[in-house]
Length: 193
Image 1 (spheres, rainbow, N blue to C red):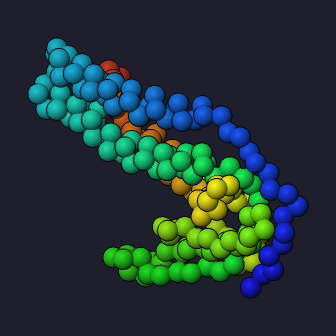
Image 2: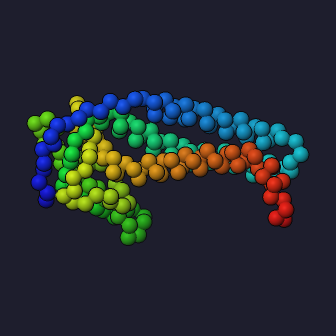
Image 3: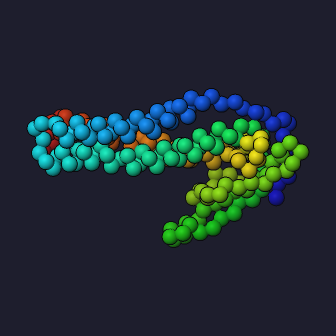
């Protein structure tokens, strides 16, 4: 097990709440826009019934992906909102256990040790990762809440979740636009038939 190094000084980082405002705006406005897109597609003249149904599903079904991505993004924003003190932590150990229903796959649960004031804390995420991005004994940046060190996040681990959240939100934004403009896209690519 690695030695715990005392950080030179814990730094408190104040983050602007712009990301939270953007999240709120998207979480409310984009689903409303998708339902408006579905109404436009349903009322558009000159389309066969099957085309209307498919185009409408293209505008509404991706909201499932969008919702999952926005939920992940919201969790990340909450972690960043409350965990504002930066320190260096040591990866104390990495526990793993089988992922339920996934054959030989495992979930990894890294545990981190760091000093919060005069107290040594040992924390781990409650949910595991399918891939571990840290090694035992590695020094990593860790942000924790000053009033509750058990509220924390590790940027190197959060990167993976951010990518997934952006991918899912992207699918939830691009596909409804494809559904909205599907009739025009069909006419552009009609030469392929």
